[in-house]
Amino acid sequence: MASGSLSLSGSNSTWTARQNKLFENALAVYDKDTPERWVKIANAVGGRTVEEVKLHYEILLNDVALIEAGGVPLPNYRKGRKECLSAN
Image (tube, rainbow, N blue to C red; front, side, top):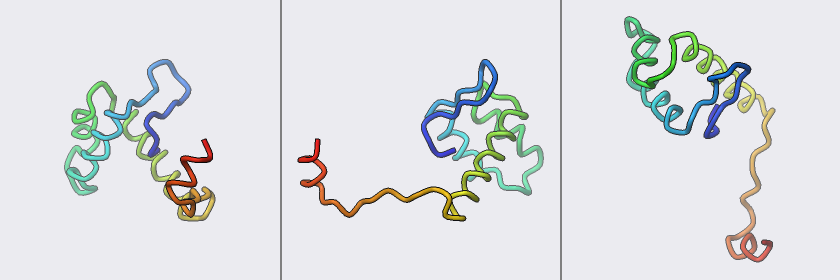
């Protein structure tokens, strides 16, 4: 998930923004052909098991598929900054 944190069922399941960034960077470094890819990604993130990293990746793939299928509405950026500020 692209949000700052992801909450799953379980006690130690919230991903911080920092862990998400480390995860994203590790995905860019260790492609699908990298030996022991998930071990390396888990080590790069820190504090996460291989199973947690794989699950996080599956959730990311599902999120991307939902976005690409049009299942997530895009934000409306038509308003100018001045209009947005005056609305508050």
